[in-house]
Length: 177
Picture 1 (cartoon, rainbow, N blue to C red):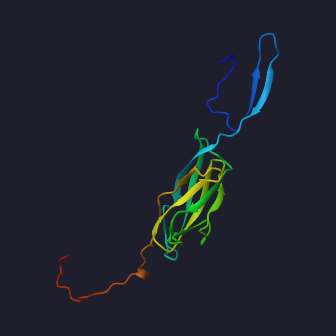
Picture 2: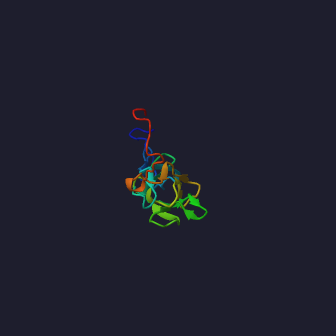
Picture 3: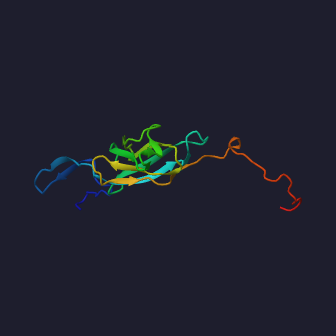
């Protein structure tokens, strides 16, 4: 490295860089370069909040937010990228969950934020199951990931939904459990 030059450890992706060169007895030549963004190479599932939702009309929470992160090979977030989000959890065409809005099973396109994150609401369907959401970079179908850890449970127990019946009315156990 020439005296006074510094080497970047951050990379130049998406930056405007000014380069200057000079030789003894000659004036410096300076040029500005616009460096293209490094392409997105990895989509990863971040989380689902909460990780358990309940069937519709069961008295429990019926919506979860699923998040994915898009980065380049250096691990830098990739903002303003279109991501196609789709459900992989269908039961013979009957949705086990819906995506974006209640009742929707069609793929949706989201855009990554400044941190490379895209999120989408997932709503419970009519069948208790595990839910898989796929996130795929719109410009490169090889960059994709599936979600994990989202479960639709049958519902919380409620006193109004429980019945108790006796077969024998006189138990001879008295003090015996």
